[in-house]
Length: 116
Length: 112
Image 1: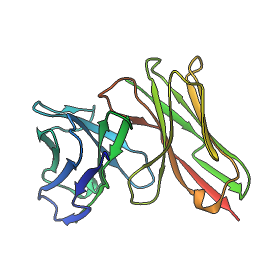
Image 2: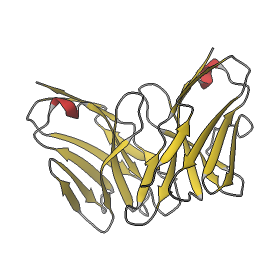
Image 3: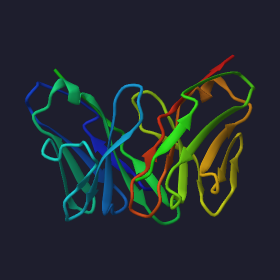
Image 4: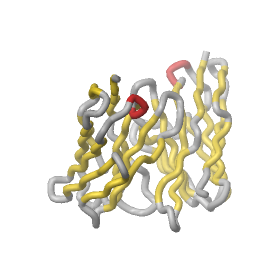
């Protein structure tokens, strides 16, 4: 149980284009999802907290106009990297908290974004 | 907000030895402390966690200890094996619905 599906697993895009990453909770309702970015050999850095039906909360230093987050349903949150540049190349991963017997956090499989 | 410090950044041990990774956190309200193992390009895998009402938790070769007064928690791996080689992250969070904040990670290398 408590599975989060993330797509795509990898994407290569041209500089200046936009890329959308989706995270779906498959067997539970995720009112809140978290988006992280991980550069090579670094830790997972929280970018934003996505709340169903309301605006996302962004961490300091994360441009909300560049990283658009939408959480329109209890099972789907999307991150759109707009006007991507090579410095946006990174591993993006979502997470959701699940309650019940196995209370904890579950992670998507991650998206490797390469901007060329 | 919460800040998590993790040490050491790299750790090399011989197969069979024990490995200890330590983390400190800043927010005394934090109450959930998981440890993750991450292989390159993959999602973090939960290996053990502890909540603030418990001082120690063990699962076979892995144990976690928590000192709330000092605001630190540690991961202990005994009888290390080469397959334990990976990057390990500690994390902390302080209430339902908030994000995990991660330490910077420890690269563990177990040589046979």
